[in-house]
Amino acid sequence: MNIEKFIQLLSEEGITLSERQLEQFEMYFHTLVEWNEKMNLTAITDKEDVYLKHFFDSITASFYYDPLKEPATLCDVGAGAGFPSIPLKIVFPQLKVTIVDSLMKRIHFLEHLAKKLQLEDVEFIHDRAETFGKKNDYRENFDIVTARAVARLSVLSELCLPLVKVGGTFVAMKAASAKEELQAGQKAISILGGKLVDAHSFVLPEEESERNILIISKEKQTPKKYPRKPGTPNKEPIE
Image (cartoon, rainbow, N blue to C red; front, side, top):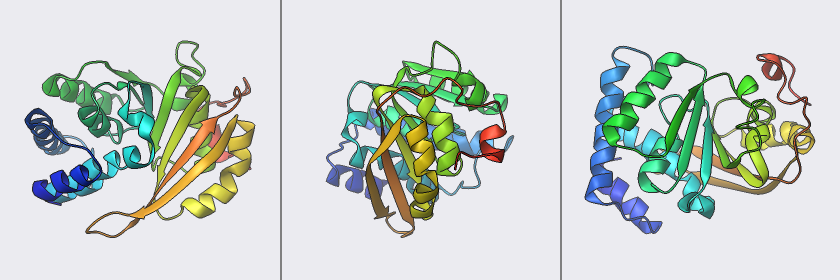
């Protein structure tokens, strides 16, 4: 996806990017590629692919969930090189973003990136999602929690839903396996206090691969035993 197409498709969704925002995306791309030579951040480094599969793909969450466009607290679990939260933050600077990631090297990259892009109201925390979700300062504290293809939905729900405040929303961004994952993950979502309120399926432009955005509202508090200790959700998912 070239930059003109990126601008055009966002414009069709009512999103107009300023010169400053376009500069930030360019800086993001160059910083990502530069750091990727020293550490493994992404397998995708071709410019048009980065704009399509990282930048545009990240922003698609806002096409289907309007509160991302408003002032809100957002936690991104396992964001890696900053997806989807940093592209969302560039487009909607009023978001207050917290990223939790288990790899310190990625946190260093994100801190450097935020400084370079002059992003405000961003916080980067080196932690496992399982232990982060137990901390009183963060547990059930966020309006929105996002995760993009980190793990199966039953596992992801245990990592993310404990962080969502009651009345808030977990936005899960999944690829083609979403329907099967949803069937397997319904019990976990319910036990953890969530309820699926919407599921949007669409095709990423140009590449035409399937994407799914699952909107899960937090209806009641998550039982204190969740999330379980690191590694357990993956080994023994709630089923």
